[in-house]
Image (cartoon, rainbow, N blue to C red; front, side, top):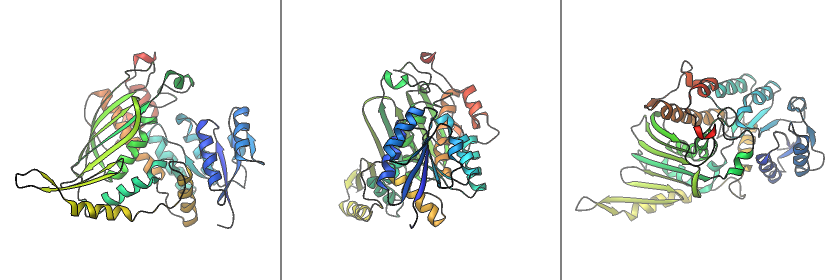
Length: 372
């Protein structure tokens, strides 16, 4: 790369600082040219972190006029992704958007369409996809050795105290656009759906607010069915004292999980499970072939930037494209709809469905009385 890619950051909260750190790790490829936030103080703080010469704006629309910026990083709250993204595309800028991509499928589709119309790239930040152990699991699951998945399960476990919800836009559906499912365990859900690599057929779900004085859910549990016949459980909790992600995938004879582990069985004479050491060795051999593209501390956002840069240079879709981000939003929308209506919801969720729009979700979704 002969010329560094210019970066402009919109939104200067906590997550923006992680973006700045990641861009600095890729300083040979990119340079932060400007930052923007409604709060001048926050913008100046981020500009100082980004380095000397970083311009400061309180109106992102002015920043978009700069010719030396090719990529806009959206670090704004979830409700304010679509407007700046579309404005960026109209100025010919590529966009790296923090999760969730948008609060509704309609917003996702409008962002994806605007990117395509302006020949720009849209990438979603799901940085956990680039962890080496996740890449190992992906390789194994994609192999003929593993075979079709029969059963899978995931847990996205987080903990947040009351101070977390002192930030005004958190804790309600209008601005946070959801609770643990949309804003925390979305990382685990994205990994899970990507690793399953087959379209969703339906979901039956429940959600509750058990331990926080907020309007959005702090717990959701879902049973997914996939078009290939696989069945999966998914749980998302904001009440788990020990945080972490867990996933497991089973075919007829093979098993792989995160944290990374593999297992294989063959039928014993009594019809039970006996260790198949030969198959385990084959799985480990597949995993050993995975080499990370970037030798950097994980997890961070540098991989997301690097992937977008390669997509721009090679004129291809990013690994975590807007379409990929949309898949996770559709799954979450299905969870919210099912948990609210108390019935199984089938995919896809189409534009004639009230749950397709942000307004429809806000009008219909189950809200906790604890947040009133």
